[in-house]
Amino acid sequence: MKVFCDIDGVLTDFPAAFNRRYGLTIPREDFNETDFPMIMGQSPQEIDAGLDQEFWMDLPWMPYGRQFLGLLESLFGAEHICLLSFPSYSPDGPRGKIEWVRRELPQYEMRLILAMDKRFCASPDAILFDDKPRNVTEFREAGGQSILVPAPWNQPYL
Figure 1 (cartoon, helix red, strand yellow):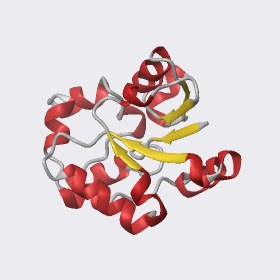
Figure 2 (figure 1 turned 90 degrees about the horizontal axis):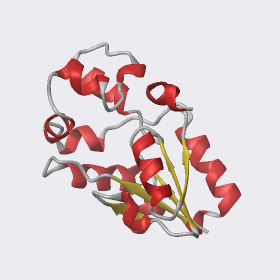
Figure 3 (figure 1 turned 120 degrees about the vertical axis):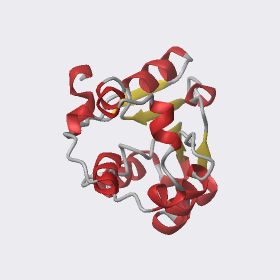
């Protein structure tokens, strides 16, 4: 079994970092693909493109992030796990994500995939753990297995 684990919103706390960066107090449940862009008055692509390397490099862990990855490792074996993340629309975003993995999870540096479309990794022997309902659905429709990781912004989908 190939196990793919999303980073942002699963292992790292994007909402906390975003609020801290911009001095905002957007509730966690509003960090979904509909409400968040509406609150910001920008498209998701515009929001993402404005996040620099330091933003991605300095993301804090989700309160349960380390434990979640540890659980996946105990269930599937670390050697079967790959981190799979959207690279970012910012030209510096991928470098920030790579630096975060190098610092926080160096054992995964060579098992990190930055992909605009996670469906490319889908197959009958692959499972994706992600916080975005759209990614979970698309991965499953592409022939993989997927599990929606519970988060305040995806509660209506659980």
